[in-house]
Image (spheres, one colour):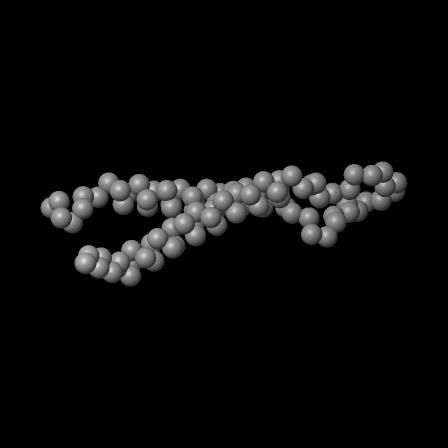
Length: 96
């Protein structure tokens, strides 16, 4: 008969769920930023004689939206990667 392994601490399980979730969210934000950047820019592109107004279609994204989304995604990915690298460099408890 083999001994049952000790239960995984609750904090470790939370880290195993939260860090990959943050990494996936970062990738989703970067993908959304790429999609927003590929959308046509808001504004009037046709000839409008004697018109002093600019047509802005509904639902158009501002130019800074893609930058903010990509920045947030990069921060999440960098934070998740930094946490994983930092955890690997710690000495194990039984090595002390």
